[in-house]
Length: 337
Ligand SMILES: CC(C)(COP(=O)(O)OP(=O)(O)OC[C@H]1O[C@@H](n2cnc3c(N)ncnc32)[C@H](O)[C@@H]1OP(=O)(O)O)[C@@H](O)C(=O)NCCC(=O)NCCS
Image (tube, rainbow, N blue to C red; front, side, top):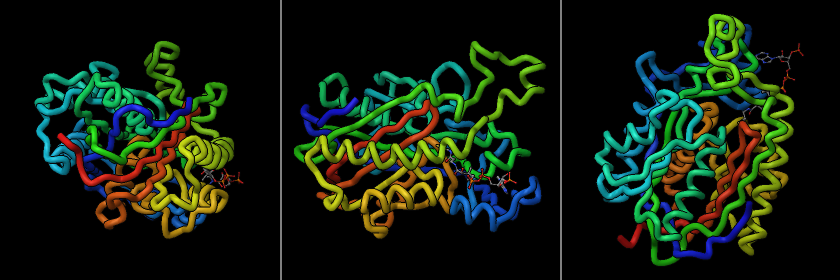
C-alpha cells in the first residue's frame, strides 16, 4: 500500500530510546561460537551489541524509552490515547505488552495493542498511528518499537546470533500545524516467510519437548536470500515513497534505514544516490535490534543535532514476513497540543 498524507498534519513530537547495559563484543561471541571479530566486522559492520539480562523482558526496555519520549514531548502517560508496540518478542503471547506498558505509564484511556511485522514493525505502527491521528480517532499516540531477540536466538548458531541485539525506541505522535508525515509505502511478501522465521511457539508448532529439542523456538534464517531481499526493497520502497510524495532523493536530508548490516545499508545508499553524510548508522554499536532499530537510530540522530525543523527524513524498514515499509517526514519542532 502507498499513499500521501492528505489528512491533518501529524508529526513526531517526542523521541526516546533504551538499550540494556550489558555490552557483548565480537570477541565475547568468539568465545561462545566459531566466529571472529574480523569476520563479523567485514560481513556486517557490527562491533558490539547490547544484550538483556535474564530478568529483562521487552517492557523493561520499552518503558524507559517510552518515558523519555513522553518527557521529550512534554506529556504525561495519561495524555496518550493510542499505544502501539511493534515487536516479535513481547513479554508473553498475551496480554499485549502495549497493555502492560499503558498500565505502567498511567495511559488508562489508551487503546493499546501489539503489532507484528518483523523488523518493519515500527514503520507499520507509525503508519497506523498516523492514520488514526489524522482521521481524528486518536489525539496523542505513543509508538514503541523494540525487541529482545537474544531470548529467541540459538547462541551456538553463528549464522544468526552474531547479527542481532536488544533495544527499544519510542516516539510520541501528535497533530501539528504544518510539516510532519508526507507519506508511507508498506508491503509484504508472505512467500518469503520461510527465509526468516521462528517456527515454534505458535499454533502450528506449539511448545513440546520435541519442538524445543529440535530448535524450533529459535530464529531460523537464510542469510543470503534475506540479504538479496533487503538490498532490493530498501531501494524500491524508498524510491516509491519519494515519487508518491513528489520529492526527489536529493531533497532527503537524513536517511534512516533499518540497521541490519552496514553492507546492506551501503548498497542501498549508493544505489539511491544518498551522500554518506546524510545516512544514520549505529548498527556497529547495537547490532540489528529489529523493531527497535529505526527509533533508536532516530534518537541517535536527534542527539547528534541532525533532526532539526524542516529537514526531510526518509525511514525504511524491512524484515520478517517478508515485509518492508517507508515513511517520509518533514521534521517539526513540536506538537500543537
Ligand atoms: C548473514 C550474512 C552476514 C552472511 O554473510 P555472507 O557474506 O552472505 O556469508 P555466507 O552466508 O555466504 O557465509 C560465508 C561463510 O562464512 C561462514 N559464516 C557464517 N557466519 C559466520 C560467522 N558468524 N563467523 C564466521 N564464519 C561465518 C559460513 O559458514 C560460510 O562458510 P562456508 O563458505 O565454509 O560455508 C549476510 O548474508 C547477511 O547479512 N544477510 C542478511 C541478514 C539480515 O540482515 N537479517 C535480518 C534482516 S531484518
